[in-house]
Length: 148
Image 1 (cartoon, rainbow, N blue to C red):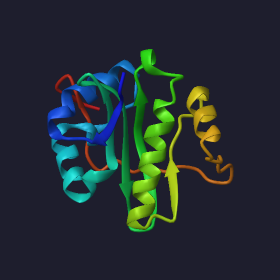
Image 2 (image 1 turned 90 degrees about the vertical axis):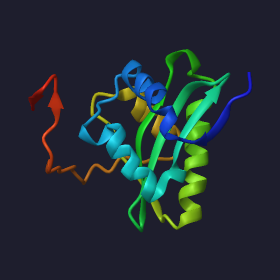
Image 3 (image 1 turned 60 degrees about the horizontal axis):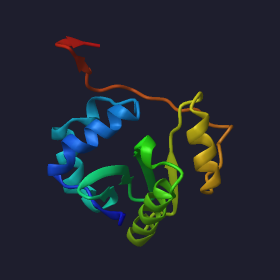
Image 4 (image 1 turned 30 degrees about the vertical axis):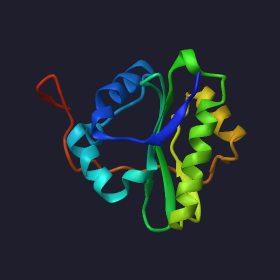
């Protein structure tokens, strides 16, 4: 089976969204098709999908703030794990982020997601014990017609 890593296109959205759901990613209001279209205009070349036989098996969304690269929504279908696919996505994203000038890459991992923590540490990421994440929501998230 040949696995192809390529930039995300809008036509991939449903398949990617299904993968995110299957992988239980914590999605937010920024993960809608409308918000992702905005992201694609800014840096679409660093949102990658891995596919085989026209089936999306993995994804990683990169972002660049002018100095740092960021990683979001990295997911690999459970049936395709332990084949190096997640690492291949990371290597390609890192190459692309370096190419546009990123000096470091940052990501967020839930405290209880030990599999992800081990994966990222194996790929060269170091936990920053002296920092905390702070977030201010600017737009209410809607679920089932209700604001959360």
